[in-house]
Structure formats: structure tokens, C-alpha cells
Amino acid sequence: MLDAGRGNPNWIAASPPREAFFALGQFAVSESRRVWDEGDLAGMPNRNGIAERFQNYAKENPHIPGMQLLKEIIDYGINRKQFERDAWVYELVDGIIGG
Image (cartoon, one colour):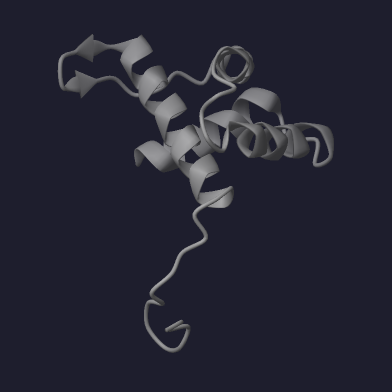
């Protein structure tokens, strides 16, 4: 049975949007650990150069589910909407980290 009425449905859009969301989270955690990594504790991501680090991360990790869509989303913001590269990627990363 498909429950798409009021409240939470019994299905989700598993891919690619949700996978891109989790791919962003993985990048964000790697950025946090790059700043400070002490076991279960990590620092807050650094804005300077984050767009280039994301591009490198995406090239090194094309196998992560959702990575292609995430790259397209970030590129859309930069190329079509003319968002400042580091500000755009940092805003996404800071948002998913909960900063």
C-alpha cells in the first residue's frame, strides 16, 4: 500500500536527492576533521578554499552515491546563479553540520 496522505508517507525519494544530501554530509564531516580531529570531536569547517577542496573531494570520490548530483547542484549555484564559490559551498556545509 502506498501511503501518501497526511503525515509522513511510507516511502522516500532514496536517490538521487537523498544520496546527494548524505554525500554533502560526508564531505562536511571530512572538512570538520581537516580543521581539528580528536577522535569523536572535530572542528568547524573553514570557509577559505572550501570550493576547491570540494571539487578535489568530488574527483577523488565519484563512487559515493549522489556525488554527481551534488556536484551539479554546487556547479549550478556557481555557474548559473553566480554565487561566490567559497561562500556557496561553505553555506551548504555549515548548514548540514549545524553550525
